[in-house]
Length: 387
Ligand code: ADP
Image (cartoon, rainbow, N blue to C red):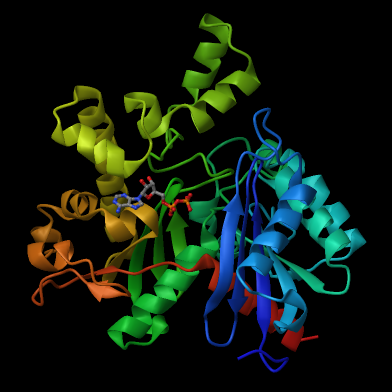
């Protein structure tokens, strides 16, 4: 099985206190090893920094019987959240590119600094390999101006690079391609809505493979209700809290990112537990669930109108792939808009891409497992092939 004919990529997703990794065979799609190190740098943790975390990842892979040297490893793929206006293609990293990336940290202070740190550490520990950054914003780089533009002072927006960038792009692209493959139809011929519902959640409207709109904006805070993020709010909430509650801007930002969403409403962000709380009659959990579903339905309705004609709606990520109640409630009562979900298909736990709509539903509704690591690995191989 081993040998250098295979093209294996180590995909790294480096967050502020976590490092997730997966060793992916880009040709077969097989994940050879994978895992995550949590609580990096936290007082109770024995992992002080990202360098220790990556060394731990190497140890874990060795324990799992993976010898990196003989694995056919050709590149390290780094998931980077924000590419700004500069980065919209998978990018081979050198010192100059990393310095450019560093400059983007102002635009994405919560997300990019840990990614840059992960890149620096990985280059130090694996100096002979190509390191390639793949950006969450890339797929949405060509969003039409009417969807990408905030209706605010244009000069100010241009000066500070304020636009709607969109995130989870790797997943939206991968899932839309998989949906086309599942339906046996060319991507170019399909109008799609993709609902990526994980801890972070976003929706997109895609026509012929090109995104027309997406729910996240300047940062991943905009749009759907998420595990701990508020999604859309009136921006005046921020100035009001600043003025009336005397909260600082960092405190407000942290509250909206880390202590809002379903967690902010119900004290729980895990949808498995939230569902159990709803079942047991917990009023806060019910409200959190209802607000989540209401926002999701609003975006589905908006994107049906943006697309005009829709062929397929796909659910993906932790909640989208696993939570049948969310899918049922998000799609309920939409037969006049062309969506009819089959109750039994929706409850099936079959793996892989599958249809949950009725055969007569004009719009196909699918569950499509996402695989961001594989998509990143393939992007890396493409960069290497083009060198
Ligand atoms: P991320 O990659 O953004 O961290 P995931 O895509 O892993 O997130 O999704 C995490 C979410 O998926 C959590 O809210 C979790 O509760 C939910 N989830 C995972 N499995 C299930 C399940 N079987 N039923 C309902 N929700 C689930």
